[in-house]
Length: 407
Image 1 (spheres, rainbow, N blue to C red):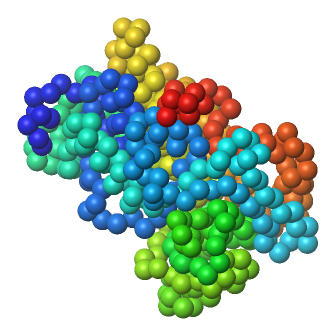
Image 2 (image 1 turned 135 degrees about the horizontal axis):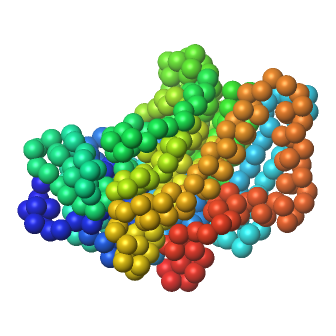
């Protein structure tokens, strides 16, 4: 632990130094709180996945002065294409949504997770946020929040924000139960080069086992999320690079031409995890501690960033009202602020995912009819695209449209 951590009073300790945790620390610092981050800092291991940061997230990063460092590593997503590859007798129509239809240059930007973590960490360092590369071994929420570290040091604060992943120690210490749904699906991830330009188009093929999604990266490169059965994942991961590339070409209908796979593939078992509460006194949840969803619609990290921005708002409002930062009023406000967004998106993702897995023709008919209406009815189409980027309800201050002008 640094000397500053020992002697500087801390308002909020963020447990977890992934992108959601580091962003929360930056948002809290921007709101004027004294923040410490505890966890394995980015750089020790490589995360070969990518994340699509949607418009509201980009606005917040601009407001925080972070986006300029991320932009060179980002690929714009200007067209969202949905293709029915289920093989159903009643195929849904092709859907292509363009960002210009809702007045945006891009829906968002796809960036390697390693780049996101590195730039957020640099931003936290530049602001003087206390960073502790260590393991939390004990959490006491009796009076405020007291953390015991593996080094034997202790750290006290009014609030401990759990941004420590789907097996969150903060969530366990807070006694928050979760509702877990496990899917008979596995996501295989990879990055690859291709001979045809992607044209800033993200394409999601809906297949009988789940989405097969190609998302642009800078240059003639893209990232892949291929959702299949666990057994098929075993088969795909056992393929050599040439055979894996041929698989991508075949399943993508060769829209990107010849494929060359880059080193490093990932495997992630699909599940949905939703806590029964998103905060209790002294312990709000952020990122995957607050929600785990299947990789559909680029919602996961964007939800996590909205968590951090909303937490900063709720604590700022508590401070202005003279309320204790970790008290029931502030934590209830945070729970309310995140509940509708998290629960509604978890439900929508679950519904779409189950519609792909369902063997029943009426389900496929309903999905196809829904996409047809979205394609044909302009106001509905634009509302669908806007809602996919940002909740229609109140957004955190950092992510409101006026942030575009301030950035």
